Image 1 (cartoon, helix red, strand yellow):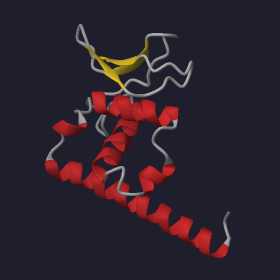
Image 2 (cartoon, helix red, strand yellow; image 1 turned 90 degrees about the vertical axis):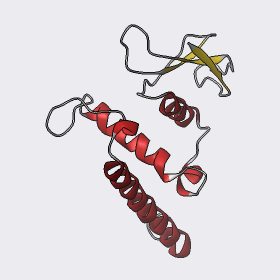
Image 3 (cartoon, helix red, strand yellow; image 1 turned 120 degrees about the horizontal axis):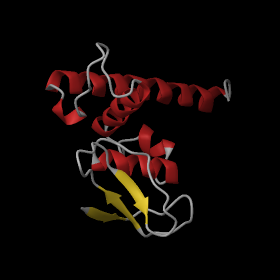
Length: 136
C-alpha cells in the first residue's frame, strides 16, 4: 500500500512522495519520490520513516526538537531506531530488536526519559551560550 505524504523531496524538490509499506516479509517503510526515485531512509514504522525523511528535508528543525512541538515519545522512537541501525537491529544480547511499540511500557518510558535528559542538557547548553556567548 502506498500513502501520499505532504513533504518535498530533498533531492529534486518534488512534492510527489509516498510511503512504501513492507511487502513480501519486508520489515521497513520507505518514503519514495515518484519524480526522481529518491528514497529513504528506511524505518520500522511509517511514522518513523516520515519523521526521518522530514529531518533530511529540513522540515523538522532543531527548534522543533527542543520545544514541545516534537514530543518525547517521537524522539524516543527516533533514538531507538538509530540504536537499531547502529547494531543491525540487534539488542545487547545479539537478538533481534522488537519494534518500539512492542517494547514493554517500562522500557518505552526509559527511552523517553533518556531523550528528555539529553533534550534538557542541550537546552541548558543553548541557554548558557545565549546568556554568556561562551561556547558559541
